Length: 402
Image (cartoon, rainbow, N blue to C red; front, side, top):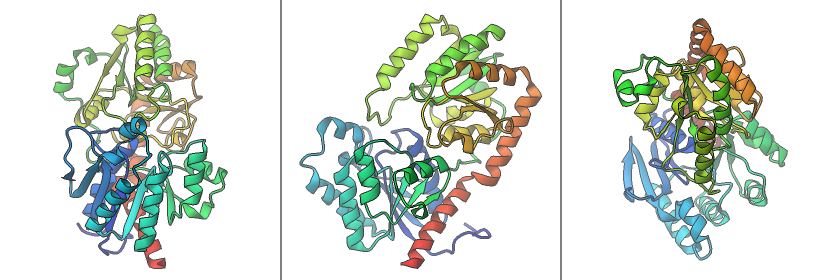
């Protein structure tokens, strides 16, 4: 692929990524990896990933040029039940074999400053033995001793924070700000692009036809604000009795806290309690169907009730030229600017959310203006190539120092 102006020199690197999950496990980090890793390949680099072995997957495979290795000792759902005692030798062997196979110039861990001390300490020892820079992308922060110890006591070469919110939180526990670089996520702007909804989406979900559609694409969870969305439906329904709120279920996720099923049960009962069954659609949507749902949507909402680290949903909505309403928590206000490409409402304020949804549904010109602006912002700042270039530039900086 032709190098563009200001992109890194064409030194071929061997880059080993390590993370707990990858599709069919789904989530924000997993989606991010499906975007950035193949883009690194397109830059001419050799890219590998060590991740969890889950049912139906091969131990060795390839994803868009990325060499994937899967092992049970990276499966957090299994580790949560099994525990970490007695796994030290196996972890060391698996990590050693993976690094021997790919001989990386860079080791890049994702969210390994949490969950398991033995995993990251083993990785850090092997990186040091090889003289290999060890990068961390902090996709999240936590409030406990394990996070505190692993963030401070592992000799990270450098830390990438996915938002200024995450960087500030890490500075708050004493991490030197010069050791942290913020690189926002990117999205495949060629895959998510403004379009008319295809007839197939209406054939599959006829309830979408000729109705105002509000899409909450985040997985069903209280921390993602799904309960706030349900409460907002009652407000929107007063003016738009046929409004349809679309929620995205989840089949394969890393459910470390074990809350997923309880959250789903609560929300289903809340919908029934408010007699909103005819105003709600819940299903599990593959990626290509997500794009069609965005196309059929009037407004996207993401009313997270906790400090959302980033939220790829914002970029997907912007790429599809859809207005988005988010809450004023975490990194989301860094991307969504009130009245520019969407609206920002207070966390857990279902009244404010409901009335902003009504405002957007009322005004077609407003919807289109917010959507167009969002697409323009995305094309200038959050393309997959731009954020991949920023990451590779960071690698080059530290390799040159070395």
